[in-house]
Image (spheres, rainbow, N blue to C red):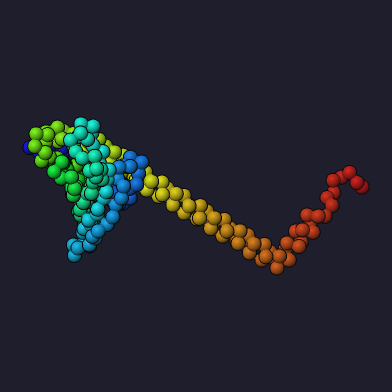
Amino acid sequence: MVKYFCSSTDIRSTWDHVVSAFWQRYPNPFSTHVLTEDVVYREVTADHRLLSRRLLMKTNRLPRWAERLFPAGMSRSVYVIEDSIVDPVNKSLTTYTWNLNHTTLMSVEERCVFQGSVEHPATTQLKREAWISSSIYGFSKPIQEFGLARFKSNQVKAMKGLEYALSNLQGMYTSCVFQLKQGREQEEKQRKTKQLIFNCCHFWKGGKLKQEMELSFRPRNTGLLS
């Protein structure tokens, strides 16, 4: 018996931004259980798809009832393989993840598809599927129930982590735009200053500036003196 989970959601961001945030989502305050991530393989295919394999290490805190059944020295770390395919032509990102160790206790396989929306370019559609199983005789059902509940909790955290990465990217974009705008304004001020200096120098060479200064310092006839 395998527990199956499926959910769909719309992410209010373009597919390009979502993919960029996907690669930068760790670390984040919502996924502190993710300890490390390493790229072990990467290739660009002839049809311009990006294939990647990453190794992640996560913590694996057992529930109290499970701690009585398994050795105290059992590793609490889980090694997870994440395969991904980025297809920029069809605007899709597909990921497959599964755990390498503790598979007898629990095996969790996940498939996610991030698909750009044709009708709504500013929205990315996410479909998430998971299959949870256990080979522990007599305890497979409660373990699968626990695994499903934990997966639902973690996928909520994963979405918050992705939104956090998107927010950081948006902040970087806003900062870059602001700095670019400031730079252009500064260039415009410098251009105007240079033009003013040039005009003043040209005015001086023509002798007009000296005449204007002499006129400005000449006593005015106020009518009080005869």
